[in-house]
Length: 204
Image: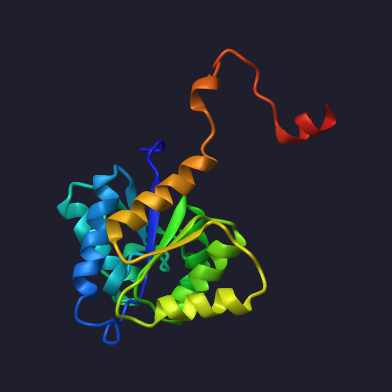
């Protein structure tokens, strides 16, 4: 599983502003992630990220959720968040802001659908961490909001792609991720070799 690309889906938990096709777009985005043999990651939440997870499971994919809660009980009773459609849930215990940081950093890239302020937060974290970013364009506002942030942010970034087609978006983001991958064929772990701590490596 650790060799599979992990694609995070970020988006709104409350979707009343997202438009009539947001549900279908979310499902299809998750399906495409699974069809491309990648793991679908989300914030263990409702709305657009949940729809992507549902689509991924429908297509036979593996799913991971990162919860703001510190336990399953807190996740369900205090945050009122779902556990369905997730193969694994990581209970971060850091609330939404801390969860966002762990969520994006645990993923190889982040895909953005219809969103709100929390989605913008995850976008800025992924941007600062130089993660590959894919933004799904549709009949919602967040894609234009993110374009505006980029236009007035005075920082270039060639690792961000926009697309209206979920399949094309996933493929373009995976292409960016693969550019970061090391050539694993050139690395072989030798269990008989002595381990070296970071401090020892610095001494040398």
